[in-house]
Length: 522
Image (tube, rainbow, N blue to C red; front, side):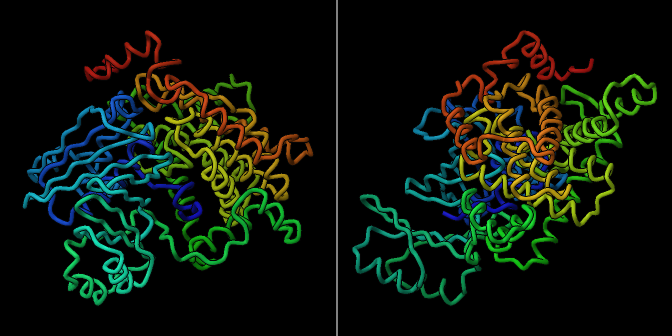
C-alpha cells in the first residue's frame, strides 16, 4: 500500500457535492466499477448495509449524486453531474438504491451489482475511508484491493496450479495478486503506466486466461512512480529536519515531489491549481449563491453589512476569516466546485483563514502556495492515523484535522520554523479532540458552518501561540494517536448517522421534513 499523497489523500478531490465521503468517494467507486465492467452499462443495483453510516442519509449527503455520476462517466466537477437522473433516463440506464444486510468491516460500505447491455455481470464491494478516498474489498466474490491510484488489469481463469500461475507471472513481469475460489481464480496486476499492447496480447493468447478487464487511475497522482522518500512519518520528519533546517512548507513540497514522482515545477503547478480553485470558491460564495434544496441561503454578505454599521466586536481579520469560510461553505452547499481540504464537510477552514491572513499581511502568492504544502504534510500524518471519515470518528477527523492543517500552514506562511508549525498543529488539534458529527437534517450545513469557522479561528489562535513561543506540551504524533483512540470509542450516533446530537433534535426533524417536501423556504 502506498504512502499518502498530498494531492490524493489530503487536498482534494476537486468536486461538487455536500460530502467527500459520500459524494466524491461514491463517484470514484462508480467510475472504477463501470470501467472494470468493460462494457456499456445497462443496470446498476447499489446497496448499503442497513447497519452502516450511509443507510440513513445516502440521498441527503449526495451519495446518489456521486454514484450516478461515476456510473455514467461524468466528471464530479462537471455541471452535468447535477442532472444525472435525467441523463440516466435518456440513456436507458437503470440505477436503483437499496438497504440490505451483508458482511462489512467499515461504516461506509457499498455493494454494486452492474449488468451490461450484453448481460455481463459484475459485483464490487468497496468502502469510503474519508476525504473522498476509497478502498475496494471484493470483486465478483474474490479478494480485490485498490484505491484507484494505478492502472489496473484484472484477469479471470479456472483454478490454476502453481506452474500455471507462474506462467502468467512470467508474462506479466511484475507482482501478480491472486484470489482463488473452489472453481475460479482472479489475478490482479497494478502498474504506474498503461499496459503495453504486446503484454495484453500475449496474456490474452494464453489458454488458461479468460476475460481481461482494465481500469485507468481514478486519483490524480498515480502510485508506483515514487522516488526514495526522505521521511513519511512525524518522527522521521523531525529527525530529517534536525540537519536540514527547512520550513515545513518546503518539507511538504519535497515529500510530495518524491511521493508523486513529479518534478518540483509540476508539483508547484498542481498546488497552484488547487489554491486557485479554493480561492475561486471564495469568490463564488461572496458573489452570491442560491440553491433551493439547502437549509442556509447566503449569509456571507452579512459580515460586510454589519461592519459598515460598526456593530461587530471582532477585528477586521477575524471578520474576513468568517466571511471567507462562510463563502466556501455556501459555494459547497450550492453545488459549486470546491476542494475537499481535507474533506468537503471541513473544506472552509484552511482556504478561508489562509486567504484572510495572506491578504491582511500582503503575503506573496508564492509564499502562500508553499504554506499549503505544510498543511498537506500535516494531512499526510493524519491520513496515516485516524483518517478523515467522520463516520468512523466524528468531526474531530474533519474540522479537527482542518484546524491542525491550517494552523501549520499559517505558521509557515508567517515565516515560522517547522518546529513552530508542528507545535501550532498540535495545539489546534488538542482543542478539537472529541468533536462529534451531528449534521442537522442530514445536511452538511448546520452545525458544519460554525465548526468550520471555529476551526479557522482556532488555527489562527494556535499559530499565534506557536509563533509567540507557547509550549504545546504534547507532540503532534501523540495528539493524532489520541484522536484515533477517541474516535474508536465514539458512539455511532455521533458519527454522521443523524441519530444523535443536534441531528436528533425536534427542530432538525422538522427541517428534514420541510426539505423532503421541497418547502424549506416557503
